[in-house]
Structure formats: structure tokens, C-alpha cells
Length: 93
Image 1 (tube, one colour):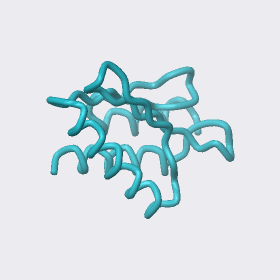
Image 2 (tube, one colour):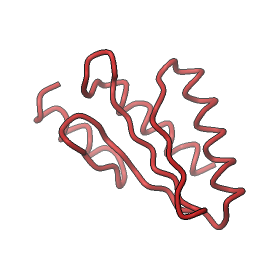
Image 3 (tube, helix red, strand yellow):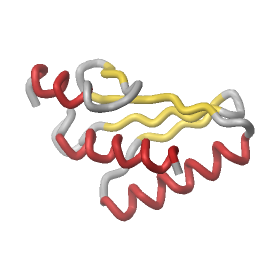
Image 4 (tube, helix red, strand yellow):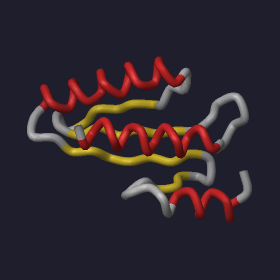
């Protein structure tokens, strides 16, 4: 995906950032560890449904970092941006 298209799609997301021109990521904060783990489980279920799996990290007991890229192509695809938007919806609910 060319950089112009990446920037166009990135503008449609809230607080997602481009890393190494190969992935997008976002950090989510929660009140406690339990909420962070519940979010991770919801994202895991969504990823299974979509057949597109992010890298997920939990740190500082209440934060998660979600990173998306399409491993098969070694970079970004539209599916990464679609899943990012759906993950934001999970957080909102």
C-alpha cells in the first residue's frame, strides 16, 4: 500500500499511529487489570471472527498496545484499517 493511501486511511482512525511504515498501533488505557484483560479477550474474539490477528501486548497492569499489519505481505493492507476501526468499536461498547 502506498504511503498516500496509508495516510488517507489513518486519518479516518482515532489515535492510531504508523510505526516503521509497516504497521499501525494504538495504546488503550483501562481502570484496572481486569478491564484490560476483558478488552483483550474481546479483541481476540473479533480477530478470530475476522481471520485477521493483531499483535497484543499488556503493560503497566492497565494498558494494552494493539499492533496491526498483514504478515502475509509484510506491511499494511486495508484489512488492518478495517480491523482497527472495529477494535475501536469494541472499546466503545
